Length: 256
Image 1 (cartoon, rainbow, N blue to C red):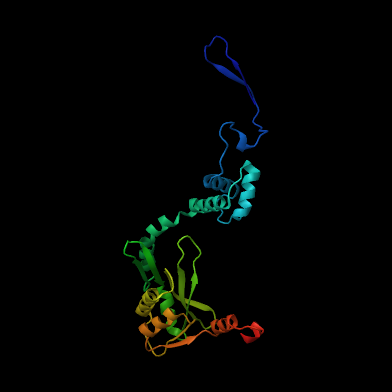
Image 2 (image 1 turned 90 degrees about the vertical axis):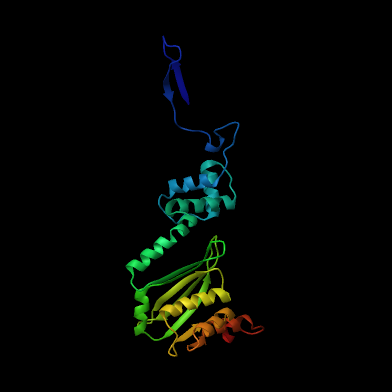
C-alpha cells in the first residue's frame, strides 16, 4: 500500500504519507496484464540468492517446486535444468569460454611442470576434437614401478559428450598411479591411435611393457600398431562381466 498527498502551493509535487511494503499477493500476479514467466534467468537468480557461491544445488525436480512455491510460477523440467546450469556458468564460466582458454592453460601446465606433454587436435572446421595430458612428474616416477599399464575409458555426460581416457599404473603401495589422460570424441581407430602415439612419446615401446585393457576392438588394434613389442592382456573383471551378460538360465554371479 502507498498513500500520498499533494504538497500545498506546488503544481506537481506529492509527499509520501504511508508506505506498507508487505505484499499479500504472490510476485507472479503483481501485473494484471502480463503474467510473470518462468525462465532460466529467473531460476538462476533464485539459486544465486538461496545458494550464493555454491556449485551444488537442488535437482531440477526440486527446483520446479521451489520456483512454484516462491514465485507462484510453473516451469518445465528443462527450464529448471537450464537455470541450474546458468547458475553454475555464472560462478565458473561457461564451457565455450573455457575451451578458448585451453591453450593458455596447457602452456602454463608445461611451463611449471617440466617434462609434461600436452597436445590438442582440432577437426577440419577448427573445432576441438582431442586433448592429451601427461604430467612430467608422473612419467618420471613410472621409471621406478612395474611396467604394467591399465588403459580404460568412460563416457562424459555433458553437453559435448565424448569419452575420458586414462592410462594408469600401480605404485608400491598398490594405489592407482595416473600416467596420462585424454578427452576423445569416441572409442574408434583414429582416436585410440592418436592417444597411444602420444603416450609412446613419453613411454616408449618396450618388451617389458604390459597393457591391461578391455576387449574394445579399436583399442586392441591401436596397442598392436603403436606398441608392437609390448605385451597385451585383458582385464579379468571385464571378461567376467562379458560372460555374465551372455549367461542365461544360470546364476550369473556364480558364472562370473
